[in-house]
Image (cartoon, rainbow, N blue to C red; front, side):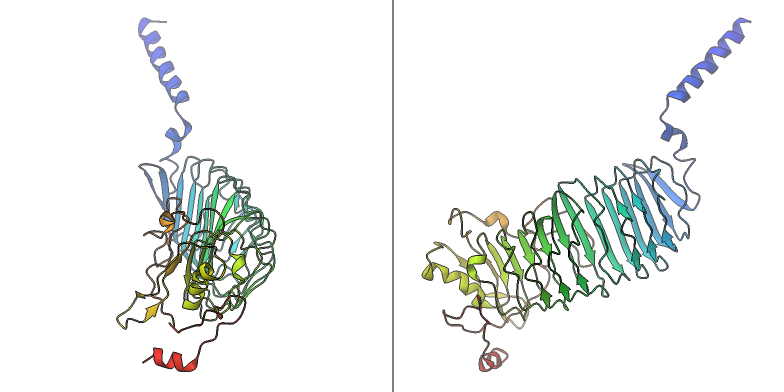
Length: 402
């Protein structure tokens, strides 16, 4: 073998060794980008697919997947199983998608966010469609044709603060028992806006560690079972029933409640006995007599030394008087504790329902942009709407409208 041959062999050997040592994704990423999709690699490897009717094969190194304005019939089982690095999947605007099959999203170890939006024909989600997703921290399902609350009990997330958002489902009428059991073994926040709920059944939140339950804009919601929070490991710390038709709150399971939101909840004329709210610090209420009920604790029971009850907020050009946020010290603990850090701030959710990072602040006011109006009628101290129906006099109501 000549000297030139030896040199050529060494060069070839070095090249082969270099190729072998390169990460697999470096070799296949862009060569494997589906021809019907757009691929980009800036901060993360993202693939966006438009107007497809079959989910193509993706490179294993993909981090974020967008399926936009698609024409899928279903999301098949194990369709993403080879995507070992996938962390985010978004499906948005599909007029033909009807089913999420068993194992549609299965055993994806790095997945953190899944969002399905504007799939109005989606009517079936298999109980094991979302299964074994240990790092999932956010699941959002918006504006679909579902008629029953989806079974999500096989997610089994270990994330410290899991957020579930189910919004704009006019055909789902009830939340059954054990609906949230098995989603996560850590803290859970549920955001259930603008659905067709009429009833929340007993033990609906059984087995959960609840941080916050947002039910606002469920205008048909009339019944919350007395035992809906029975079986919870802890919480909830925040409950929002604004813009609902509920006439009562459960008396069981509110011992940890710190924030109560009940703006424009006109049928909620009776609250549980005031001793139920052992840790309440903030309340947004419809009727001023409820607010004054907390204020009267200072006179009647001596629990409170300080109280702020703002009843003079103006929201529109007619300047109707509205009950503002009530901030009180907890009934247990330091009665002079500062609660300023629990006030609302901008952020959370836009009006179109798009989730925006709240930086871990559990005291966000998610409907600060809405206008609320309340009848501001007088109420004697003995009738404050706790444990008995709040009476509204017709003559006072007539005067308030003129």
